[in-house]
Length: 385
Image (cartoon, rainbow, N blue to C red; front, side):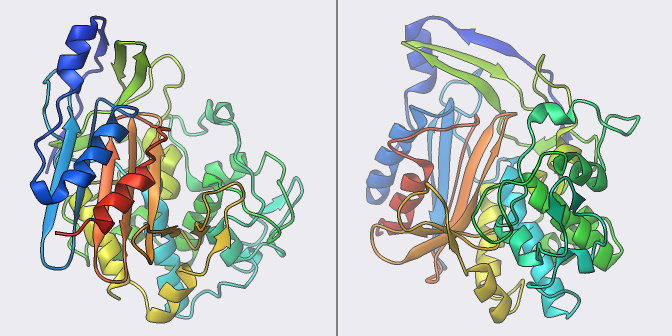
């Protein structure tokens, strides 16, 4: 893998004709995947300049692309081996390491976090004797998400954060509810989980995730970046911010940082909640390995799949231990996790018990609806052929 840090480019495609030419033409679909291509094209029209999906089963895989990976190269497809920031898909890696520690008898899911991190989750309404490890991993701890402005002053001279910094800053926002009484998504939970890994393994969390997950599964295109490392291996999918205003497209490349708003270190800020860099191929391999019993025991995987309802979420969806349950239109469920990062990537990977897999990415932080990215995953997993 070759690391590359490209200069930012501010690009406005002001002419409707130019915008249409650059973004509209999808890659030609194999006939047996025409249904997925149609959903992909509709999704991409409301998401980034490009979008792609990599899917298949135990026997074979296939991929489709729509739009362009790079606005400077019209109709350049996003490919399965292109690197991007997996963002919150990192949480499943982190949870898997904690479950390995459960398998090794070093931690109990329903033990209070204070047993392992005494005095860390305390104060400002938090009580680590009442918040369990399961609450942390399942986002039922009540820990809130602080505003991004809380992180404008890194404590390290080089502009990076430690996990302990992130937890301390995160707990500066009061809790949302009593532990175990509701559900709320917060990166701080997974910063606490990262501290737990470091406490029990005696290693930096990045090293533990690498040695326990990335290397054993042979995820050669996956990396947990060091603090301060903004690079992406080539080939990579550029990330963009911006979007559509009527017939016009306005995109700013923000792959390596968000200009003007916050010049903060992405790798250390995301950390065990969202730092992993990967590809659609490798992410599919990770989730397949997890479900094939190569990562945690059958008992621990069953715990990861024990879900709670997501308030205001889609019908039938549930959140386990960094695994989202998604009901499929063709029956059964898919299991995976989404990832979004403001530097310009939205992604989702999911697998089924039958060995089917699907991983998608678009090159902006997207909130596209009708179709959702989950609809794209559903189409790929349910389409025959």
